[in-house]
Amino acid sequence: MKREQLEHIIRAACTIADDGELIIVGSPAILGQFPAAPDELLVSMEAGVYPKHHPERSELIDGAIGELSMFHDTFGYYADGVAPDTAVLPQGWEKRLIAIRGSGTAGNPG
Image (cartoon, rainbow, N blue to C red; front, side, top):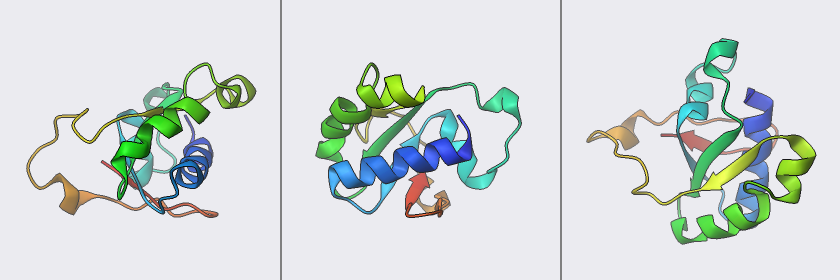
């Protein structure tokens, strides 16, 4: 997944969840710190996301732009609506979040 594809997912997911910020988990999170990461690190076509302020709305994201959705069929990549406890993260991970900012996006890779 390229940075612009992740930004597209962020914009769509924020709109669907009516939340201005997302937490991104999994390999696409590297695009926060390294927007032009090498192709070897960008093989995933899905981004695990959950709304920062309304994590319970991740199911809405999964249903609207998740795997096998029209979004996925149209663009070839998709969001995987996940829960905050999906990934086991080290203590203090929230302090290391890096915001992804781009045309209408506000995402924080985790």
